[in-house]
Each structure stands twice: as structure tokens, then as C-alpha cells.
Length: 150
Image (cartoon, rainbow, N blue to C red; front, side):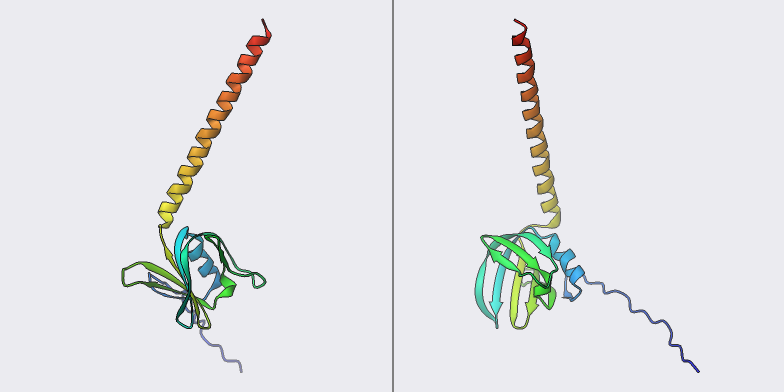
């Protein structure tokens, strides 16, 4: 006789501002929106390094390292056991990347919306500049064509 257990599916977690994230894909999704951050690196509660930098890449690869150098952060979620999301005393969002007595705390210096606006402004500025360059080139070509006819 076979016994069938009811299909009891546990719903996916819903984390709002605080909680622990262990799923590497969820960790990547959260970290990918970060731009400029203040980082604090501690081991066994002792400060090792602190500074500001830009999150350049977020990835999951057990063969690669997390790198923080030259104001650039390359974050490998496989370097950490979990991400703890919390609010600081100053009500700042903190992303604590944890692994055996080590913590890399990231405090965003901008919001994802601000980052998107800045990227869009940069793209718009580049498009406007390219339009001016092409227009100037066409004007120069027209001038060259006109001077050839004399």
C-alpha cells in the first residue's frame, strides 16, 4: 500500500527591508542594482578595510574571487554563505555579505532609481554628442563637395 502525502508547497519567502537571503540568484538580483557604495570589511568583528567604490559586476562562479580594489567592487555571491539585509541605526539599508566570521557590509550611496536616471542621462548625453559629431562631419563633407566644384 502506498501512502501519498499531500503536496505541501512552501511559498517563496517575502523579504521587506530586513531578512536573510541564501539563494544565490536572489543575492545577485539585490546586489546588481547597487551603484556607488560605502563598504566596510570586518573579520571576527575587527575592521580590516573601509572605503567607497562602484559595484562593477555581480556574478556567481565558484572558481572566481570577490575583488575590492581601486574603488571597484566585483562581487561573487559564491564567496558568501548568505546576505543579511537590514537597516542601520541611521535607517540606511545595509547589505551584509557573510561568510565564517567575515562580513563585507555594503551601504548604498544612491538608489536604483537614481542610478537608472544617471545612466539614462549619460546615454542621452552620448547620443546628443554623437549627433553633433555626425552633423559636423556631414557639414564638413558638404563644404568639401562644394569647394571641389570651383
